[in-house]
Image: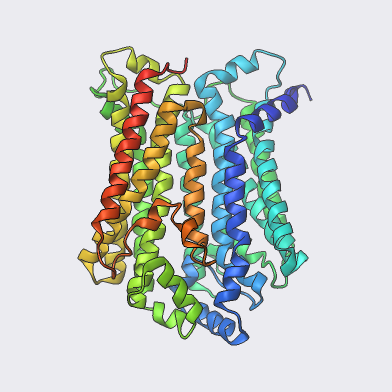
Length: 522
């Protein structure tokens, strides 16, 4: 037990450090799940509409790949079908980020060595990180269970436990990767890649089978979640798969943690060349962020292809369901159904791109707090020059992501190349406003920089849930995306776009002014 000495103190410290980020992750995920029953009740209020939906899912492989198979016509089962996979993705992302932050990030910054010099056990930090992820997932499970209990307590409990179980599978997986790699950036990248692979395996399996029985589906923890079948004759034994995976991975992580020195790894980073090839701060920023840009770019292009492939069949999917048609029109405008669907999906990708720009901007915060920015700035590099390299990647990368999304739509849909690309690029104005807010928080209030995640999460929630619940226009207008023209199909309005671009410029300028005048974190 001496190897776990100090675990309680470190757990409290971890939860205190994440007192903003964990509640935001949990709240956004829980609200996405809990908003679904009311939305789906409006969309599919009759047995005939639900039966028609099941028929569409069974005959549409692309739709199954995107969302998964549906197992029952009850409102609870439809909720688990519509949001279960994506809520599992969010829970997994939250968990892996928590674990990497409190393990490899701490070692890379040197703080773990200082902590380890006290009366702290060898495995206490790893245990505290896993427990912090466990607390976050437990709260998520409680909120989902309590919020969906009205649809059936048993099904709500199954969905809540399933989401928490997915989170813990990826938490323990991140714990293993953190022992193998020497870089927190690489640990996050590898674990995120595994998460993406899990989604692709589930999608491939579900497209080949309408009941989740494909071998590919069973190779993915996200496939286990849907095969738990909340509200559809629950398969409780699937939880044993989650438990076995969590225990096995946790055991391996503990074994690895006990066989290496603090700060070291089993796969150390290769030494660089004898003579450095990075001559500018911008080149260094690209070297640090290129992996993230490549990963996001590939994901956006693939999602664009999938959504584009669904566009031709959207009329069959919606059918005579006026409620579904109205939601698409609220999200994508009053034009034809296909254009409304395209506009709504383009807007959704813009909301997700806001997460990228926040992550990229906050890389400045990570470089500063880890102490890596100090030796760079000690040379003939100005603060603005150092920040500019990362901001070009953040804001330019957002444009690249939306452009690749448009290309994906064009590949999948095969029509309206110009209008679709233009619609995607217009979304960059909203994305840049969110990026500008992140720059402002980092430059002026660095201790509150992580609150930018809360802003991005709130905007995502407004855009995702607001139209489905027919939220008041005043609520939708809180998001910069609510002011953008609905393209393709609608008329182009340059006024709101120019105003948003100007607002983004002002926010960035104010943030950089604050960065230049304040003290850097030591």
